[in-house]
Amino acid sequence: MKLLILALKNITRHRLRSLLTMAGVAAGMFLFTAVETTQHSLAKVTQASADDTTLIVYRENRFCPATSRLPEHYLPTIRRIEGVREVIPIQIAVNNCGASLDVITFRGVPAEDLRKYNPDLVVIAGSYENWIKRSDAALVGETFAQRRGLKIGDKFEAVGINVHVAGIIKSKESQDNNVAYVHLPFLQQASNIGLGTVTQFNVKVASSDLLDPIAKAIDETFRSDSQPTVTRPEKAFFAETAKQMIELIDFTRWLGLGAVAAVLGLVANAVLLIVRARVKETAILQTLGFSRLQIASLVSFEGILLGLLGGAIGVISAYLFFHWQSFTLGNEGLTLAITPSPTILLKGLLVALLLGLLASLYPAWRTSRQPVVQSLSQ
Amino acid sequence: MFITIRNLTKSFKKGPNLITPLQNLSLEAPRGEFLALMGPSGSGKTTLLNLIAGIDSPTSGDLMIDDHDVARLSRAQLTKWRSRHVGYIFQLYHLVPILSAFENVELPLLLMPLSRSERRARADAALDLVGLSDRAQHRPPELSGGQEQRVAIARAIVHDPELLVADEPTGDLDGESARSILALLTSLSQDHGKTIVMVTHDPKAAAVANRVLHLEKGQLVNPPATPASAVS
Image (cartoon, rainbow over all chains, first blue to last red; front, side, top):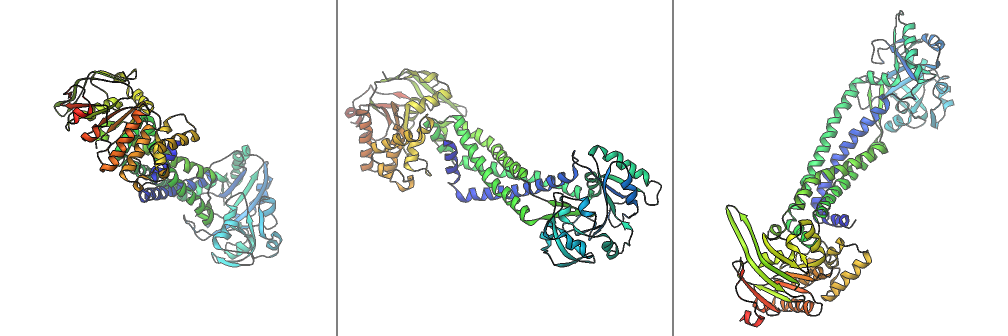
């Protein structure tokens, strides 16, 4: 503790240098946290878990909502398959099938079925009843509304479709927070797809171990039909359909590693400069009786403080940035909300601390071994 | 004897040459003696001082200080021994500029198992002894040279070592400050029983010591003398 206080005083000795170092560390750790947040958000929507019970029925060999067309009359057939708990037909309209930062997605669903299919949807503004009553009404996801600055009563137009905001919804499923739910017949007509055609069916099954057998049963049922299907668990569907976006996000891993390397080099350079400027002072401390371990600890604490203080600024800034900015990545009609996570915040702080320690190990070792007499006579 | 040195030799390699700043030096000093080391530059004064202070190790010979076989201690043992038994006073004070006078004096106490209040009491007492209680919160750049050296002396005595070593403690001070520092060192020897070994080029400074030793080419060149005869 005493050495830590001494280390803190030491890094305030050259304030500008320390501030510039911390600013560099903050920039690097901001980038690292941004990459980690994106990776974490992607993992949440693509990694299967035991709680998953949703299947997506899509048109075989199609990857974009604009080309996946299935007859709405598949609905009762799917519903009759044993183990199926709930089915909802969905028409999807998007402004852009490619990977994009600003995707607008409309989901057309039968008004009477939405709540039954998704009871977790919470209307946080407006009302569900108003949405039912009005054919051009939309229930807008919280993140979508925030991103577009929408409020109840607003009208907005996208993808050539004009809607009226009847409610703002919140769900534990990030996909729901990034779309606008509209009435199925309205969207079918407004998007010129025509009545009776949908993009996909979302199927809820009784338990996760039924996902594979029911998927096979659905595909088998429509194998000889003119519109054969491919049915996958929701997260596998996301992972396979939004490949472009996933590859892009995978690449950012290298940016994160680059940021970590930059922080490591920056702190190591700063600590080396610090100890080189204090050769004689270190020798004085050694003369007073400070051991090698205490000298090494003092230098390491300075590195850790530079890493941790700069890192904390960068990591917390990134957390707040994603909290307030509500970034959404979209691909093939699927959206990925980049949401900050306390786990990533803690991971970022831990990485900053470890980088500070790692960067100061060599300077600390070298300093603790400098010969006292020669250093005093410098 | 408090200090017993027998056939002490220090040599080291510098490039292809073997340098021997001290050769077969022997001396003794009783507890509480104020010893001055004089001699031309390169005579081995500072080397001897560093060996006595335990910041350097001899090549051969015996060095006993208060029954501690200092010549045989490992580097880690020497570090620990220094922190308990030696106070070092430098010519250029070498205070840590970002720390206040109080914090500089407190530094050696950070190595001891003392509570904060105990450290405070000891540092205050040391600053009081050197007459700088009213400058405790001042940082080195806010102090005069004489005051800085007083803080350095307080730092050297705060952990109550038996041995004080001083490397030209008045070398960078004006006459009046030098006299006051020498008076302080004399008092530490006479009133507090500290054994002091001081390197100096200044005959007036050497004159306050109980005994003056003269070194040349790594060896004592005259038998222990009284201060008056050494100065003359």
